[in-house]
Image (cartoon, rainbow, N blue to C red):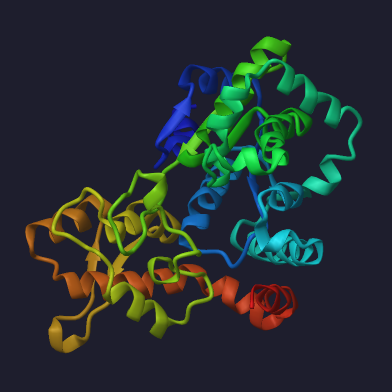
Length: 340
C-alpha cells in the first residue's frame, strides 16, 4: 500500500484526508475518482497537471472519470455560452484527454444531469449550504462574489459540482487548488445529508510565465493571457519564444519554469535532459528534479539552457496530442473557429 499511496500523493499540494485515503486503499481494490473540466478553449500546460494525476490514479487501480462539464461551462459563460461552441469544446477535450490519459472514462454533464434525482440533490445541497458559503465558492469558476448578483445561475454551480461527485458515486474528487472550495462544500454537505464523504486531492497550480504567483490563483497560468501560457498546440519555435521571455529568477519560489519541471515535465517524461548544442558541451542529464533545481540555483545550469531545455521537453510531452490533431483535425478546427 505504501507504493500505491506514494504514487497517488506524488506532487500533490493537499489530500483531505490521508487517513481516509489509507482506509480507502485498504477497503477497495478499484476505487472511483473524478475530475471535471469545462469546455472553454485550447488546452494549456496547467490543464495537464491534474490530467497527469489521473494517470497516477489509474496506475494505482482507480477507475477515473473525466466530467466534460458542458452545463457548467454554459453557466460560466465559456465559449460565449453558445451550445454549439460548447459541444465543439467537449469533442475537442474528448479527443485530447483520451490521447494524454489512456484508460479514462468520459462523461458529459448533459448526460449526468438527466440522471434520476440529480436536480433534487442540487436542491438538497443548497438546502444545507448557506448563501455566504456559495458566494465564497464562486472562486472555483474564476469569478468574484459579485458575479452571482448579476446572474443567479452562478450560485447553482457549486451545488452542481458537489452533486456531480455524489451522482458519479466517486470516492475521490481531484482538482487544482482552485477547486478546494467546491470539494470542501461537497464534504460538508455529505456530512449533513448522511452521504459518503469524498476524499479531496488537490494538485498545484502552474504560475503564469510572466510570474510571479505559483500558489496564487490570480497568478496561475491561463489561456486568457496567451503570452503567459504554453498551449498544447504551440509549435517548438513558439514555445522557445514564449519561454525565452519567461520569468525565471535565481530562486525556487514563484519560478514558473521550475514549476513546469517539478509538477509536469519530470513526472510526465520520467527523465530530465537539457538539450544543448555540442559546441556548448552537449546535453545535460539529471537524475531527479531536485538535481536540476540545485544545478540551476547554484548557477551551474545557465538560465538560457534551462529555458531551451524546457521548451524541448514540453514539446515532447504534447507532441502526441498535436499528432492526434493532424490525424483527425476536426475537433481542433471546429473549436478554433469558435474561438475566432
